[in-house]
Every structure is written in C-alpha cells, then in structure tokens.
Image: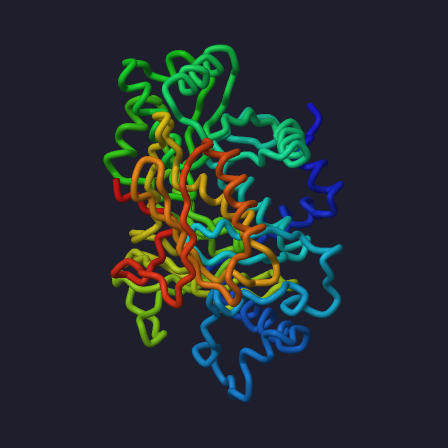
Length: 436
C-alpha cells in the first residue's frame, strides 16, 4: 500500500526518513549516551541562536550566561513581535513551517519551525501512536476537530484529510441531530481510532451513554481514542472507556513545540524527552524537586528557525518522583480546561471553537496581546482584549462574521479594550468562560 502520509511530508520538504532515523537513535541511547546527547543539544541550540538570532541576542542583553540557569525565561509576550524579527539568519517565511498558536491560553502569536524540526515532530507523533498499533499511513482516523469554513481553507483541509487517511467530524455544532449523523458514520466506516478535542469527544460519549450504545460494538475496527488540547478529567476518562470500549490515551502538546507528554501503554504520561527538554520551576525560576508543582518551562532542542529556549508555556504541572532525564513522567497537569458554550438554538460548541473565531483577530503585527471571551447570557458574549491599538470597526465586523459562520447568527458581542485581564488563581488566562 502506498505510504501517502510519508510521501506527502517528503513532497512538502519535511525530511521524514532522516527524522525517523535520528529519533530511533535517540530512543535507543543508554542512560549515559542520553545524558551526553541532552547536554550537547542544549548547548548547541543556545549557541546557534546566540550566533544567528538577533531577537534572542536582544533578550539575553548584556547578561553573562555561564550556566543553563542563567538563561532568561521566554514567555508568550516576548514572542508577540512580527515573525521576521524573530527568525534566525538563513530562515525566511518561504523556507520554514509556519503556524499560529491556538490562543487557548489567550496569548496568540505566529511561529516558525525549520523543516527538519517539524519532520521530527511528525516522527515523534508516528512513534507514539505506534505504541497503540496506529500507523498514520494506513490507519483510518475519526477526527474530532474544527475546520476552516472559508471555501479554500475548507477544501485544503479536506484534501489534507484525504492524504492523511482521516475523516473529519467538525466540532462547531454538537447538537443531538449532528451527533446522530456522527454515529451513522461509525456504523458504515472502518475507523481504527478517534483523535481530537477532549470536550467534543466527551460530548459524543455522553450522547452514546444516553442512547445506551457502546461504540466498539457498532465499529469493531476501533483500537484506541486519543484526546488532546483540553484537560481530561478522571470521571470523563471513565465515561469514554465505558462508552467507547477501547483504551483512552491522553496527549498534551503545544503547536509551537511538539507533543509534550503522551500516555504510554503503562498508563504513564511520558514526557517527550527526545525533542524537548522540560523543566518544572518555582516563582523565582528555580527547579523544584520531582513531586512538587511548578510552572512548565520547555526548550525545543531542534528548532533553529525560532528560539524556544526555556519557554514558559503557561501551564502548571508536576513531574513524578520516579522521573529520570531520559524518561520523565508527568504526574499531573493543572490547568487547561475549556468550557462548552450553549447557544440560543440549543447548539453546544466547545470553548475551543473560539480558537477558530479568534484566529480572525490574530494578525502577525502583534496588535492584540491577549483576549478572553465571556458568555454572560445565552446570546451575549463579551470579548475583553489588550492591544496596542483599539480594534477598528472593520476588524470587529470580521470577527462577528466569523462568529456568525462558526457558531450561529444573531449573537450579541461587546468588545472591551482593557489594560489588564483577570486570571485564574494560578495565573492562567482562561480564554473562554461561561457565566450561564
């Protein structure tokens, strides 16, 4: 069978063969070899950006960096500059992988990865899904994600779905009529696995529970379900296991980095130590002992296009006491939950739908720094934002049009520019909150 997935990566300039070979080598290092590899990679990526990245040099300033702990902590605000000011020498918008962060933390920005680093991300995904018998070239995916609604974006995404052997269930409307249609697809298609936003998959499972249906019984080819982007609560995990009849695997990632942690077959949340270096730090940026909670700070060991060195992702976590540098285990992730919006028509939309809506606010000029959306009544939402310049009426109209397209018409929005946004007691900005 044609390996369409690998071929499409190669054709787009992502050297997947080379990346798979390197990853395989890293995975098989002895403890001593891994320790040497990690120190070398950390030094190499810092040296590279000091020599080739003016943005990173500016961040360091006149600071004398003698050891790793002296390096500054990079946060999302630092990265809200036009991309060309953050790219390393030799990298242009044409020769990198470009994307936007979801803004699920409320702080959006555009980022770049060099093509080899992005190929490694895919190699890492392929390896981890492989632990559960999933092969991206052949396994058929039921994908619970959003999709761009504009004609070109929509077609492009559908074509990507075809190449990557997946069928997409758009998650903007999860009313019972739509979930009924989802169910019909599971009766007729031979899906190998589900993958997508936690909240959407949980809503589907609740629907199955009401109908008293076990998914595996109507779609016997299913092997596993992978949930991402939002917190999976223990009670929801039990519900999913019960209604799907297959293993539920929890992943934690960030588009600008990579998969950060992925549940292994032993049900441990194994941190990706092959392409990332993960630290847990206290308020004063000192490492905390394993078993203690702190902020998650991550270094991308391979990305040369954009520096992500000691990058504070905005989440709080705890590493397990049994963690080693070669196999760190994430004991707990605190934060990252998304509410569900209930609309006047009765339609339910996951909070992450607002990611697609707010993409229309995000421009690479870095004007909008942070935003949150509050639902105050069934048909009323407040968008609070921090920006250098007030949003103009054309921008507001564009956002309202996107909301009408993704959610439903006749919703009322107020836009309030703020100097500071309220945060959770953990300092996390919750992008969407329902007050209903």
